[in-house]
Length: 419
Image (cartoon, rainbow, N blue to C red; front, side, top):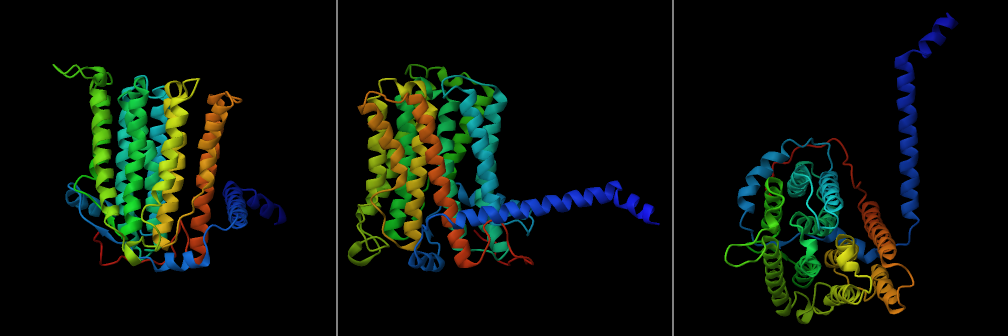
């Protein structure tokens, strides 16, 4: 009998159960260690900020041109999402797909200078569409599962700030705009700027205001560009009849003009005064001061690009703009936290270390090779961005007693499924 029991214990099904159990134990241990490591990081949010974040209510104004039509699709799509799936998990999966396809396109086009395989353009278009769709249904999923919280809005806007960087650079790669590095520079930098201005205006007025042509329309424009590249990768190097202007230059000019116009509208709204006392911001602070971080970033980016003796912008266009894009995402996320917690902004942020280091290195005649320094810049900026975002999410989750990527069962469908 003892022998038969030993043989039973060594059966394939028993071994499989044993291995699965061990894997679960190791996973839980890793999760616990990771959470403890994050909790030991320096505190980011004050007690007052956490209380105000808990009290925050989402407020928006305006409808874009395509949103009423897309709402029909998004309401249909969210019904296929299981009720046990957390809304933030929906968003981050879409972001991961979008980043993955965009990075693949950057690599294959050699910094936006060459054509690549058609299927890569198609994958990038698909990745952006998936992100757009999942990003649009996360709020609906939160209402279906009764798990709406300020963390959801914060997480959603934070992912959008990261996506803005990769989507813009990927679009430039699709039209091979890297052959005109300064056109690509201003197309990307002004795209970062217009996104920042939208949240600057929100920080001042307390409401996120959408124009008739906004993020949904911009995303569909980028998807269209990728699909044209899928059909004819060399299309963008052709010239417009009679005008003798390449189509890729036209794309850059349209991008620049639309971002300048949208930025002007947001700054005009800022100039009208805020919702705080004496027309101040939501935090009761200056309505002009939020322009300092983005202004400093653009200034340092222009200086580093213009005075580089190794032509870093021309030689490593996508990498160069990605570095500054990570800094943009960090200062934008700080602005979003400032708006939602109605707290003042700091004049200095650790994300500025990268841009300042590049300028200092140029001043001392390139003590470090600029290409090598760019990679250190990117790694540090990614670390700084992730450290800040992860710590903010952890502190808010602990304060609200919720999980970022998990919801507490059981959940029931909400009767309200409107956007």
